[in-house]
Amino acid sequence: MSRPVILRVPPLSPQLHAAVGERYDAVDPADLPTRAGDVVGIVSSNAGTVDAALIASLPRLGVIANHGVGYDNIDVTAALARGVAVSNTPDVLDDAVAETALALLLAVRRRVVVADRFVRAGRWPEGAFPLTDQVAGSRVGILGLGRIGRAVATRLEAFGCAVSYHNRREVPDAPYPYAASPVALAAGVDSLVVVVPGGAGTEALVDRAVLDALGPDGVLINIARGSVVDEPALVAALQEGRLGGAGLDVFADEPQVPAGLVALDTAVLLPHIASGTHPTRAAMRQLTLDNLASWLADGTLLTPVPEMG
Image (cartoon, rainbow, N blue to C red):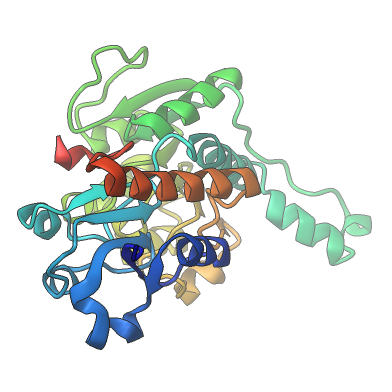
């Protein structure tokens, strides 16, 4: 009996790439000229584009299993119009991403990276490192109180922070004050953590107005998508002192990072590693494979994207 033909859309981790090959008749984009008509499923990651043209070129395509909680790399509208099922990997990465948000917030507020360079440069004997701000007892806004946003908020509570949030809609059971807009949220907090999904609906949601509301003592943390923040506006705000600092795990044109950000001591920059722990990536990989296997077995998904209803 022939095995199902699954397209691996790069980049995938070596482990996921190999696992798909072990379980299925795996093909890669270079094989599509001769194998497009055989493909019944796609395995992709956040960095691998699955657009309308690719979906249209695969007549037997039935499922897209995405390795990542975000799925703005997929044209979900085109997929659903074709009756193609789409899954992602929620929940399993919440803890890792939330602790990255806290790490960035602490690093920016306590100037951890700058202090490390201070010691390595041999400057400590010249005098004490300047005093810093602290996270404990501060006001922190969560822009996007979903699963990850709640995980961030819970950790902030342990620091004695006053947490508030903004969503497209108020969350009925949320124990935190609701702000009517991103600008209103930013105006009432010391630090703003961005956790909303990517995509056209949130592009440049954090714009100059939000950054100016956060102010010269404010800190922006982005663990969502680079597209959510108006990156030129962010660079300008930091350079001009209209924003106090930023901790960023994501960027608009990864892996390219604006030189203006690289040059700033007020910015802590990570290479999109929020979910990059061994246990989290193993869990994401397994859920991706389980979704694919479930659909192939009976047409159901363990974690379908919300648009599937």
